[in-house]
Image (cartoon, each protein chain N blue to C red):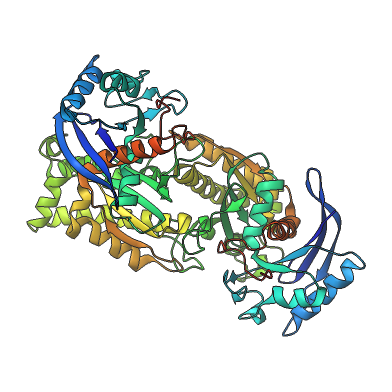
Length: 320
Length: 320
């Protein structure tokens, strides 16, 4: 059975997932978490870790996720905010040379969304919107297992839509969804509520601290999360109106709080829907392994079609 | 050369467009506008008008637009707000029997959007969002010449997205884009500004009256339209963030005012864009004939593929 390696190249921790073909699709052989090597020769160091992880196993291919923009034509990293030493490099080619198997680079959010959509919470649906509630807010529209990248690879930015008034967003606009439910922004807002020095809550665990306070019955935390989930619910209703997906998958760290995040957002959607045909709204299933699974899926797809059409989310590091 | 008839079945006026195959695509043979027959036997009456229009010309097929929901599996009209006598009927089958050629029903907005996208202002682009500014506000995402209907045939509803606060919308939500730039709502707002009895402005021409007042330098009209186009610009920026199209085509009666509608909306988009990759934003070209062109295109497509996959926008009245 062919084996494929998924490498989720994280900012501080990376994940290695060895999979093999099975009758129902890919299945896990084994997995490992490793600290992400930092600095200039980090790709080489990551490749060595992957080689060690593989041991005597031979693979038919691999993919590596990149948190940033990958040029689909060249396989090079255009820019990566968290791993700036990757800018302008071709990490898949370097890893391929070290481990002796073909590979490609994939954008991390797209890989995770495709995995959630096809083998995670979206399994069985063809048209899915995936939202990731993390430090920021990301989204992806997955149709027939592939992210709709848009004309410039920039579609799905649910976190950066809003009225144009309100708090300044990291993107430069005002009032974006991310200003209300981005994990870092919830942490900042909690500092303000409690009169703490800026950054205190995020240093102590971020939005998780606020969720814990809500669990403890703290009314101000409940109010803060209520404002956030009302905004999320309104945004999801906008997704329904614009895209009309079969299902919405909500993932990311914050989504793990069913009581304070997912359930209230779904209640807002149901309360405020009028003409809408509501999709199922479900929590993600693959958790932190979604990116590695997405990479393994991309590796298998590339092996099946060695000259894939570039989509804006995959680099063309696969040997032609 | 094969000929195809497009019938745009309007609420008060219908349009007939005879086309034929030409090297560059369909070309017009002739066209006519007829008052839409009203009441129970109106489809039969419309079919007779079409037969008269065709004269000795033989056609390979036709399509008829329906302002409402068409069941893709049966070809029957589920509901039509403006032509309620169509509910539950199969108008394409009745017209087909009368004129002796196969035909199908298509949803009017989808037909017009596909025509604008493929032979109108969107020609040359593969991924286009079409906005129609009329009495209400409609939208459609056209990819490779076909409307993305969504999981329930309900995608593209840009007119019914908003903050959930503000004026009540016809859809039941509050603050939707349509409450700010729907032609009927602009008319209502102008009544309020001038202290006129409700309905006066819409009876006198609707938003056109306000545009004329702005042309005359009336500051309150300019302010009203400024509020409307700012909202439209923000909504288009949301389309860019979510869908990332190559182009946006703005049509409908109101879009004909470049000075007071299209240009200010584009200025808002350009002023407020941050990370966005901006599409071209262009006025529609086919005007009131977009629906008839879209019907002719659908007829030709159905003739080329007599058993099309239902898309949610087309009825299956084509003989199998």
